[in-house]
Image 1: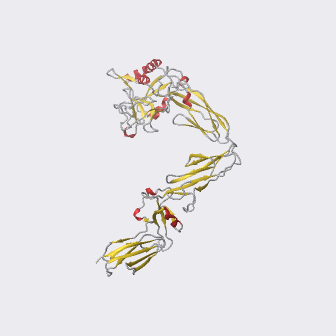
Image 2 (image 1 turned 30 degrees about the horizontal axis):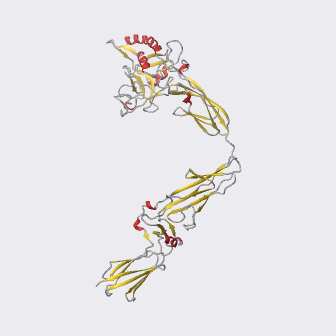
Image 3 (image 1 turned 180 degrees about the vertical axis):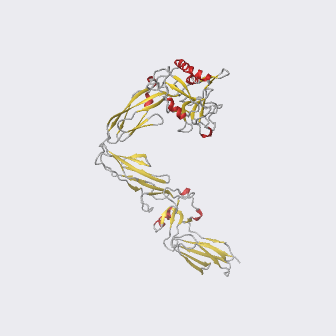
Length: 540
C-alpha cells in the first residue's frame, strides 16, 4: 500500500504532462431553416450542413420551440409539429460534438481516486464532486475514452509499481454502461453522454480473433471475449490493470475494483471549441382556407350491354354478360376529374371505361378540382369481378341453381353449361352466376370445391348400364329444370313402362325386365324442351 500511495501522488503530474500532445477536430454547427403549415409536421436534418462535412456528429442537447412539439429522432434529425391555428416563426437551438474522431484536447486531466470496492453508481456521483487538480475549477466526470491515444493517457493515471518493479494499473471504473439496453454500450456522462461506443454479441459470432470489432462511430478497448455479461449482471465498464476494458457488475467489496478514474475538461463550460451550437428557424404558415360551394361528384356504373346477369351493375362476370362497364359523373363546367382505381390514378375526364381481365374487388373514386381551390372526392364505388369460366371448355360457364320446388332441404347445385343455355336458368328464381361457393373476386379456375359434385347441363343425354344386360339395368337421367318423362317402348312402339321424374328428384332409375323377350328396346326421355332416345338391349 505504501508504494501505491507514493505512485498515486505522482500520477496527476504525469497525466497533465501527456495531455498537450493530443489534438481534436473542431466542429461547426450552421443555422438551419424550415417551413410547415399549421397542423402539419416537418422533418429537419440539421446535421446536413454542419462541418466538417466528412465528419460524424452527435447532438448533445437541444432547446424547445415556444409553440408546437419537437421530437429528436434516433437518426439525429428533428420532427416539428406545428399546432393547428398557429402561424408565425418559432426557433430552437441544438449543440453538436464530433463522434468517433475525438481524442482528448490539450489540458485534459485524469485523476485516479482510490475507493476499493465502490459501486459504479456511487463512483458516477462521486466523480462530479472531485476537485480540479489544476485549480481551474473544471467539473469532473467519470472518464470517457474516445481514442487509443486517450486510452493510453487515462491508463497512465492509474499506474503504480508492483513489488517486482513492474508497473500495473489500478482496476478503475469508467463512465460506460449498457444497463439501460443490454448489449448497447453508451457513455453515460461527460461530453459524450448518450453516445454509443460499442455493441455486444453474447454468442461471440461478431468477434474477430476474440475481439469485438469497432463501431463506425465509437472507440473501445475490450479485453479478449469481452464484454460477455457474465451471469447476466455485468452492465458497467471498468479499466483493467492491463490497460484493457471489461464489463463488471455494480457491486461493493470486490478485489477487482480499486477505485474510479475522473476526467477534467471537455465539458462545454470548460472547452467551448469542443462543441458548436446553431439555431433552427421554422416558419409556420396558415393553411389555405377551404373553398366553398364545391360540388362533390357521384359515380354511376353502366354495363356495356344489357345481357341479364342478375340486375346488379356492381357485379361483372368474366365469361358471360358485359365485359366492360363505364363509370361516369355528371360533368360541371370548370371542373377537372381524376379517376383512381384501388388507389392508383388511372384516368381523367368525366368518365372511365373499365374492362377487367382478372377476378377481384375493384374500388373507384374520382376527385373533382377547380381553379377556386375546390378539391373534393366522390363516394367510393366498387365492382366485384368473378371469373365463372369453366376450365378446358369452349365458352362454358358455371351457374348456381337452388330449386324453389321439390327441394325441402333447400339444396343448391353448381351447374356448368354453354352460354346459350344460361338465359333459361337466369330467368328462374334461385339462380345466380358462378359456383355456389364463389365469393367476390373468386376465380373459378382456382376453386377448391369438389368438382365431382358439379352437374353438367347442355348435352341432354342418358346412360343405361350395363348395356346389353339380362334385363336388370340402371338408367342415369340428365339434369333438367323441368319435370322429366321417361317412356320405354319395344321396336313396334308398344308401351312397356312410363315414369315421371320431378325436378330435384333422383336422376337414376333401376329396371328389372328379365321377363321380357330378348331384343332391342327404346327409352324416350323428354323434359318439355328437348328429347333424347336411348337404345337398350336384353340378351337371353
